[in-house]
Image (cartoon, rainbow, N blue to C red; front, side, top):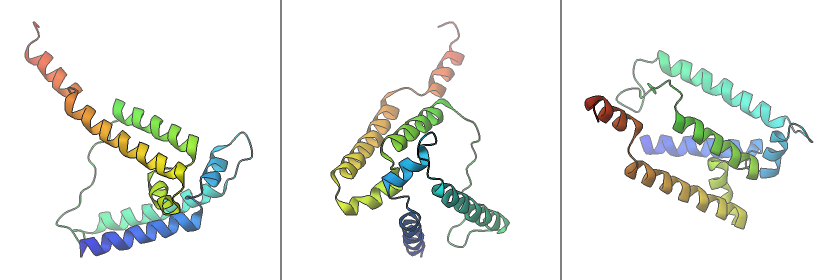
Length: 153
C-alpha cells in the first residue's frame, strides 16, 4: 500500500510540475531574473504549494498515527550547519545557471535533451562524490569528540 501511495504522490507532484511550468528552464530563469524581464508567475505556484503543504502538515500533526506507517517521522534537527549552508548555495547556483532542480530535471529526461542529460549526470556524480566524501572525511563531531577525550593532544 505504501508503494501505491508513493506512486500516486509522485504522479500528482509530476503533473503539478508540468502544469505549473516548473519543468521549463526558461520560465524558471525568467522567475529568477528579478533585475531583468522578471516573470512572477512561479511565485503563485510556490505560494500555492506552501498553502497546500502547510494544511497537509497541520492535518498530519493532528492525527495520532499516520495512515500507512507505524509512526510519524518528523525531522528533529533545527540547527543551521555548514553542510546545509553550502548545499543550499550550490543548489541555488545550479538552479540559477540552468533553471532546473532535481525533480523537474528527472521529469525532463523524457525529452532526451542533451543539456538535461548532462545536468542529471552531473547531479548524480555530485551525489556520489558527496557520499564518498562523507565516508572518507572525518566528521566535525568525531574530531571534536577526539579533542575533548584527549585535551593534551
